[in-house]
Image (tube, rainbow, N blue to C red; front, side, top):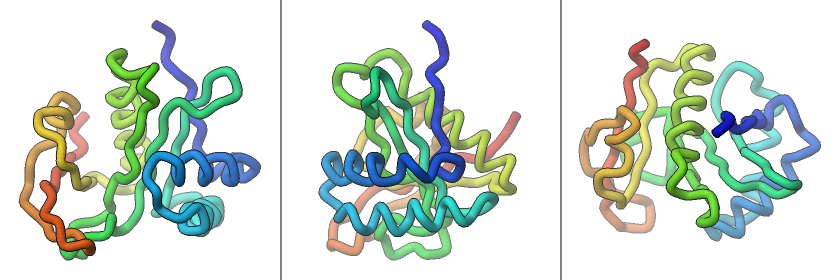
Length: 153
């Protein structure tokens, strides 16, 4: 399988509207919140936030972002990978792993060697070099697992 082409929204501001709409459909966070973060991404070529998508046949099939805090009480654990999503039709072929590795490499180039993410999944992120770090309280009151990735290459 050929490696998918990752689009960095910081370099493609014309795709922010489409991407914000797609992430909104997947996660239910207001489109405006995604747009605000993505517009900041375009103006922040070498910091956080950052947003990434993979497209196929004109549609988005996978994406994720990196923000300071993914709505939890551990503000000291930053930045956070967020909104990780792969369309069901493209799951099972390492698309998420490829995108996670791509994002970790990109953030390393931008000066970030440690990334965090929250999840309710068990055993998924470990396959890609992430390790359980601690539990955190989400802003909505739920408890989630915080994972950490340390750049080592």
